Length: 417
Ligand code: PMP
Image (spheres, protein in one colour):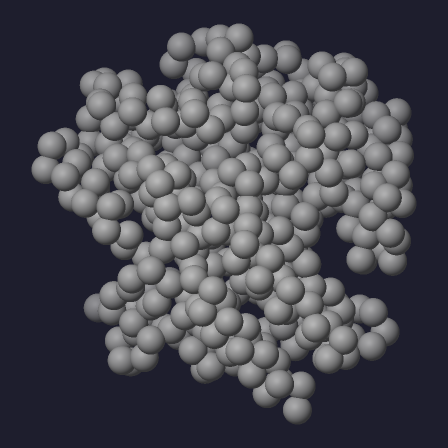
């Protein structure tokens, strides 16, 4: 007799029987509208027929070739397909399994490429749970408490969180860039700094779009000091924000891009992309792994990219995201405990705040669990968990968005009573 570990914290009591598109059928016989997508992973919806077919076909050919032993066709095809969407110049791709592993690969590469030790991260960033990735994560002490010492060489700069600081966006950006420049004279000199690591939209840290001017300010400093600019697109990438990459809402571009989650509709695969010139600063064999770039996951990723392209899902994410954001916006005026409604595309966050302006995690938790009762699956995020996040599939329909908003509003009404 064994039970699942209590180390897991369950966001909903739902046990899935099967799922299709945006609908999850529970073993309780209920249909739930899924606005969690496995934390932004099932980008083409659950079990998209083309992804299922591609995976099934690949399982019958080879499941595990091991990319440093036998190369396989799906990984070559995926690399070619990624080449169509990667930012210009990022022509070399390394594969792993999870977001955390890919973030670590990016950090290793940045250190090897620059010969410098330090990484600058931004407050509220989430980059994963392995010890090194947790060392880079500042989205909540719950991701690192109790297992220090963490990896060294990580320095945190402020994030331009305009709402929290009660500033307009331009002032928040100016303040955060000033503090970053101050960090260079107080803590990590530019010549000791290998990389900036930032999400184009803070994910687990609160669903906060990074202001374009901040992204551009980082690009400018990266150029000035030859610091590698790493964009962690694990959650914001692959169409989620209404552009293929989250950073494309600004004119900034990365030196290293990290992707995972939505790239394979649920199969575990992740990647980093960088110019060949950067990758060749590491030695062959300096990165690798048993399962990285798995053949079935790679075949599913190719199918996912094809579905996104053929079904116009980046455009759909933009339109449905706009619909969702506009429908949620009035809730801010209607309910005193909703302090902010924000997001980009299908990455929308509703921040709950007490009358004195402090974060209201209890209300966010109550709304999140009430949405399940209303038939809508949601998650919370933010350092103290006071943000409810909605992450629908990229192929969500307008009627599903309308239904989701109806159920979300009903949940808020119940908690507000
Ligand atoms: N980076 C970001 C931006 C993420 O959202 C996540 C996962 N939530 C990770 C890294 C870590 O990915 P994984 O859980 O696959 O290790």
